[in-house]
Image (cartoon, rainbow, N blue to C red):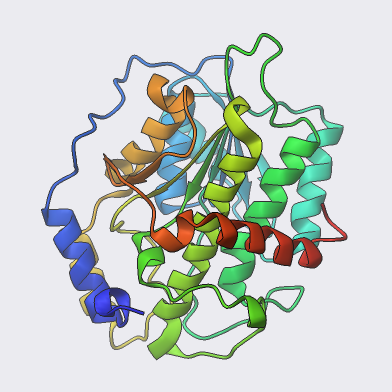
Length: 322
């Protein structure tokens, strides 16, 4: 692992530098670009980036399905009021529980839902290692396994499907992180093995989980071909609740840095909106954005053999769900 994100202070320093270098070369999608008649799904839409994306999509006329953990009473009304839309719907799901993800997929199929744009945004960074409902490390479960299950079940069930006339490709957008570049290679010999860690190693495991996700996004783009637009991105440093589990003695400083230098969720959402709305992003597949600049993913994430092994190894874990 390189030193770039090896400690919380180096990660914060990198985020500040990225923020002050500027937003890149892609202009935000004009407000006049509409999504009327489109249906979008956004995971992790209860706060931060996901909430900002949900508001922006609804404001452009889309029907927006919020995929969030239970306990967010009033969220639909809040996003509806902020967007001026009456087309916001809640679907409760716990992405740390594959049974819950599978149940959401079954409900979408049963309701004959057709989704045009899926934003896989939900993310977390626990203070110490925790297990998911099925015993996997939590970030591995939420960032990779849940996203793979949700994406592929929706495709298999026809919830995400090309239009009959081939005029519009469904878009799958995975919110990853530049931290995937600092990850060591995926250890396929110890794949999915739960390894305890504490605050010191949390960022390392975060980067590993994002390497899994970015590698998967590239592999999925290759598997689905030109009938789908599969993209991933790092939104840049976002002032959100991602640091909510930081130690109490660090929270004041971390919060100050985030408020002062990080992007607001609304600004960070511009990169997601580009992939969701821009005509160019709908006409091709495999785009990766860092903030508002298109770039290549890391060599490890791009490697075809790594992608193939990732699919093969996770097939075993998802046997009862796919």
